[in-house]
Structures are given as structure tokens and as C-alpha cells.
Length: 251
Image (cartoon, rainbow, N blue to C red):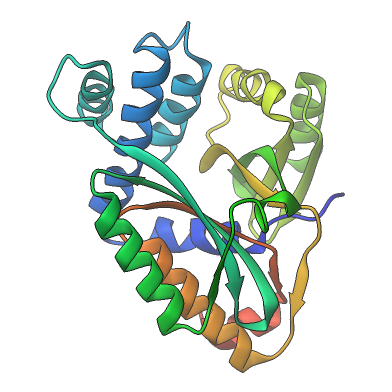
């Protein structure tokens, strides 16, 4: 089994428990606008849109919100003028960080993101300096209570998944980006509900974080970064031991 992004698991669980669902929907709406603008509003002809719609449904985003965002992207409704950017850098402990941004105000985004990095003693790096250590992968998260491991493995491997592993009470399925739709379709056909499904960045190598003070500092930094309105996703090569994580974020 391959390594996986511990931060994405932490971030997913944080989002699932977060009462501020509006912020989650806002981020997904931006993604819908961009992919609809780039490839059109027809899911059958726009695989990227289909992927984000699946993500929206997994987050229980209302259908009206999804359609409104798509129409903004295609120009049927006003709005949808967003600029894409990527910020890269190193957090305390040498942890690599890549943050994807969608914003309608580049100057505001630059100022706020730089402030968060500086506040937490993190350093921004040049384009490509950090992201070259990451690869794009499809990641699908499934509640382990809803299906047996053997049955799920049969379905996803048959559909072309690269790997599957269990992380606590969830299964994580990894795919190559080109196989993501086929695996997602197979799960949908089998009526297996996903908790989250998206194409993201996963690190080639992970950096173990073993000191509680460093881990706590990293989580504060990453949480503030993810809460910034223009940030869409945050990716790291951080790997925190589960027992250490419980000490920082007790259940």
C-alpha cells in the first residue's frame, strides 16, 4: 500500500465536523465556476466538471447551489470571474506546503496569504520549488462502516484503481487522474456513497512529524491557511502519528 496525505485526512474530518458548511460550499462553488468556464456546463462533455459535481454531492451541497455555480461559470448568470494561483513554501519543521487559490481579488489574496505564512514562521518558495515533489492523484474517501474491505477492493481494482487502504474508520482509494472517472462511476453503479472524491496533489515522500509542539504549530498554520477565503486546497508532505494527533486534537 502506498503512502497517503495525512493532512488531507485531517482536513476532511475537520470539514465534515465543521458547522460552517457555507465556507465549504463557497470553495466548491468556485471550483464549479472555473471548470464550467473552461470546459462548458455539460457534465458528459466535461469530465472535470463531473468530478467537482461528485465532490459537491459528497459534501451534501444543494443541487440549486451546484447549478447556480455552473451557470455563473458558463456566463448564464453574472459572476464567475476568478483567477487561479498557486503558492508554495515550507512550514515549521521543513514541511512542504502547496496551496491552490481561486480569487476575484489577487492583491487581497497575496497580502492575506503572505501574512499567514509570516505569522507562523513559514517561508514562501518560488513556483515549482515545492510542487515538483507532488503528483496529481484521484482520491476517494469511503466510510468503512458501509462496505467490507474485500468487496470494496474488488470493485475499485477492477475499475482501475491504483491502491486502496484503510485509515481508521475510512477507506482511501487512490487512482491515476485518467482512471478517476471510471472508479467513481463503478462506485456510483454499486451504490457506494463517498465521503469525498477529488483529484489532488499527493507527496512523493512524507516527512514524519514526531514532536508535539511542532505538530501543534503546523496544525494551527494549516488550519488558518485553509480557512482563508481564497484558498481552495492545501497539500503537504506532513505525516503525523495517530497517537500524537489525538494528544493535539482530543476526540
